[in-house]
Structure formats: C-alpha cells, structure tokens
Image (tube, rainbow, N blue to C red; front, side, top):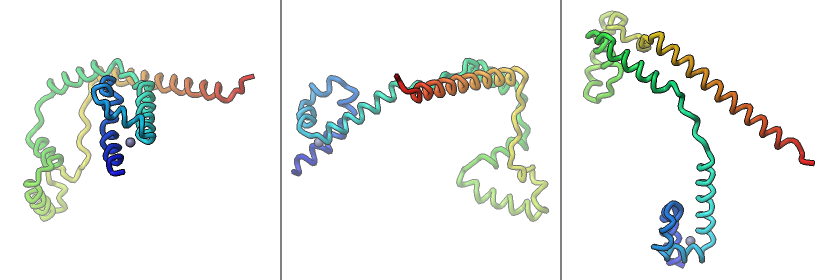
Length: 173
Ligand SMILES: [Zn+2]
C-alpha cells in the first residue's frame, strides 16, 4: 500500500512530462506501467490532457496593429521632452520611492511641512495625482484608431456569441 502511495505521488509529479513529451513514456516505462494499473492517475492525466486541448482551442485576442507605432511615438516624445525640473524630480522620488531607509526622512519632512502650516505649500505633495503626461496629436490619433479596432473586435465577438447561442437554441428537426 505504501509503495502504491509513493508511486502515485511520484507519477503525478511527472504527469506534465508524460503529457508534453511523447518520448517520456518510453524512456520511463515505470510510469507507463503505473498508469496502466492505477485508475486515479489515469483520470488525472486525462483531465490534464483535456485542459491542454482546451487551451489549444483558445485563441488569444489579436494585438492592436497600432500598438507598435503608438509605442514608438510615445518613446520619441519622451526622448524629446524637456528634462523635468528639480522639484518635479524630488516630488516623484518622494511619492514613488519605496525605499525603507527613506521612510523616517519622509515622515520627518511631512511633520516639518505640517508645522509650516498644513503642508499645502510643501512642493505640492498634498496633490497625490501626478500630472498626466502630455500626449501629442499623433498619439491621440493612434489611440482613437486603436479604440475603434478594439470596439470592432468586441462587436464581432458579441455577434459570434449570439449567433452560436441561436444555433444552440434552435432545435434540429
Ligand atoms: Zn497512481
């Protein structure tokens, strides 16, 4: 009984190998033997197999044809943008840095700012919405086209879904 238990555990840890590598069963006949003898391991392998078959059927949504050009445009803009000012850099450092060693300093700075009067004058730290980056007309246009493509895809998907649902509902006579 103990050997069967260990065999099952062993066998199950190698099920992915058996599933993905056709030659594995021939090079490791002990698992093949065990699978022939053990119904529960066989069922487990069958389940894995059907899951993988389902994954093969699943089609990932197409990537937007405008993705690359939009990314390139954004990169060009970021490269061409003027460097951020000292306060802007300090502010983003304080807002986004998660460094442990900085926290006491940040707490001290905040306390100091509060003493100064509400802290509202402290480099705009009260404003926790970082400025939206400026986007050019090119990027906006590409974004619009991207949205159109996405809407079209979703519409097609909806139409597909509803038509297949209709097919299922209509009784075959
Ligand atoms: Zn087993």
